[in-house]
Image (cartoon, rainbow, N blue to C red; front, side):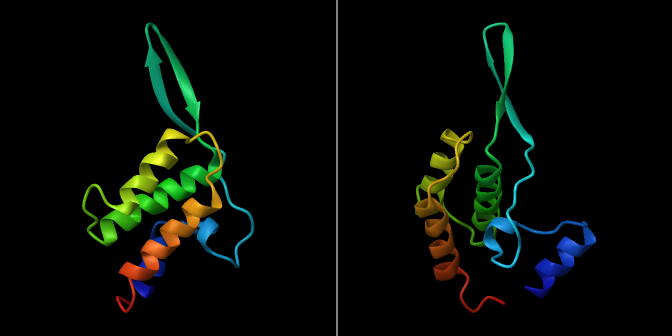
Length: 107
């Protein structure tokens, strides 16, 4: 936790407010990726909470050395597929459960 806080401090980043109960409502409102269909390019807007959850999932995958076809990848795919919608609370809970089961005592 200390290393993570120092890292965030060095890059001048507040962290992920979705997972911090002491932080107010989060969300940056940034736009997501572009998709192309034929000759036109259409901007896909991320739901701010979905984007935070997706970013958190990607960090968890790296930190726990997650293998493909595991629960964290399943949640990631669902969040990616429905990125313009707010994730279900069960998806957030699933990520928190995965974190608690895989990072216990790794401080």
